[in-house]
Image (cartoon, rainbow, N blue to C red; front, side, top):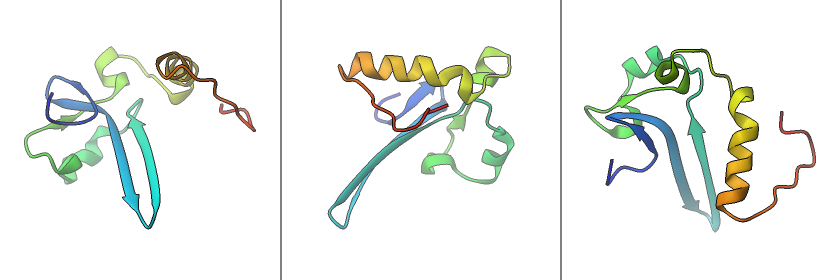
Length: 93
């Protein structure tokens, strides 16, 4: 929910998105929770957001979802949204 970044399911973050700039280098990335052990988040304040939770695809869908399940459709969607072609030097799977 605005103004928070990422992908949310209600008050729980499903995917973190970030950008870091420093020393003339910009890095960016995302973390999509597929089958993450969510109990680890009980020990921290995820993303520094008090009162917000964390969830995963497996939790939300009620079945075990691995990175291999989502990798190809995610990359296909990325190429479509950003109108680009991804080129891999190795098989991403």
